[in-house]
Length: 294
Image 1 (tube, rainbow, N blue to C red):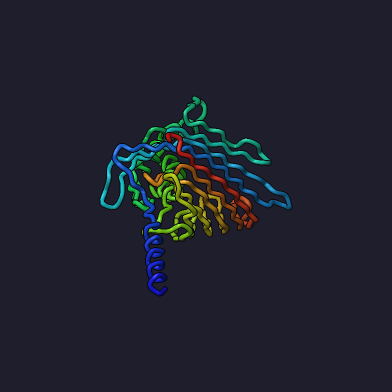
Image 2 (cartoon, one colour):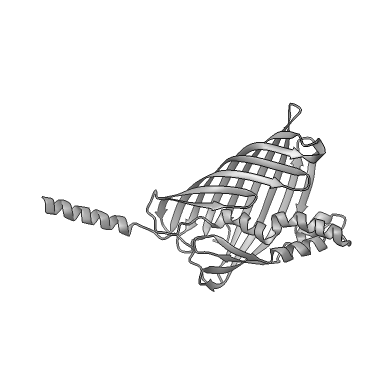
């Protein structure tokens, strides 16, 4: 009887070991992944007892092309193939509506954002999805600033500083880690958890869980605590909150098939034009990424 129990324990242990999976990117030179991104961010500020709501919409198509394999991961070219931005205010109405593919002669913003299309930046993507390096973002920012038509260097440099917060090399790295940096460094079983962190304007501490693996698909969920500390020329925002992620990834390549990221943060905004008054602020966000060249 003891021998039988011992054998059963050994069998169960072996089953557990065999069930472990190494989740990681497994890419090859020439691989191309096109991803559709849709994002909505709602900023609610309490002003004089009333709510002012600003809604930002962003949608676009991103292309990730594998240029080669490195010792620490992969060299990948990231190219914006399409980009559309819209901003509305509950008080002032439409503040911005830009379609990067449509250049309008009297619209400086359309000229700036058209420049971002088909100008690839290079990144080093680790096998766990961490973005180790981005090259070309700062050059892209320079091209965007020049496209504004501004001629004096002071104005151009101010424009660059503004654009760097979203499209500079460091900003792009921090932004797209949310989509790529999802894997652990060790093998895992179903329901195992692992942690990682993102930095930048949005700092998150993430806890990931492998929910299932079936038919070359891994389903993973993530829960995160969020800290937002943003300072620009006119505004300071300090918020904290939570973020949840659900995703399905291809176990053959490691690349996502679909991802949904939802967040809720609360805190305060301080604006210079309002004398430094702290304004209660809530930010709700929803971002989806979907692989479209399946």
